[in-house]
Amino acid sequence: MNSIEIIGWCGAALLLLGFSLNVFHVITAKSRIYLLLNLVSSAMLLYNAYMNGIFPFVVVNSVWVLFSGYQLMKGAVVSHS
Image (cartoon, rainbow, N blue to C red; front, side):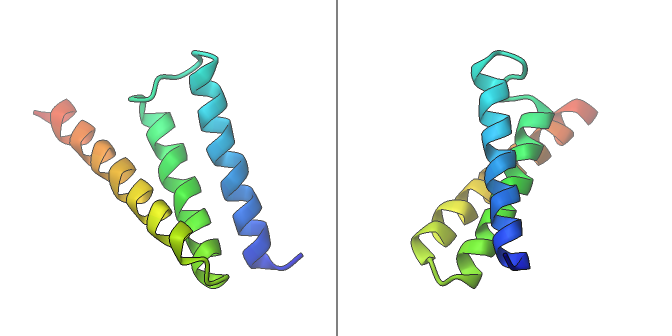
């Protein structure tokens, strides 16, 4: 297993962790930890998809990264206002 594959598997695990914690009501979809898990895991999956030339997943994970990052920044701005 090479480093690109390891990053992809770790990204998948983190994404599923966040999803599972949300489904079982441990965290909410608007919580900072959920958004961070989505941001980091999607960035890892984006890298994996790009390096493997799987461009539909590059698009999906790019949007996921952007949305998660936006929500994190929005929360940071709101909490400091």
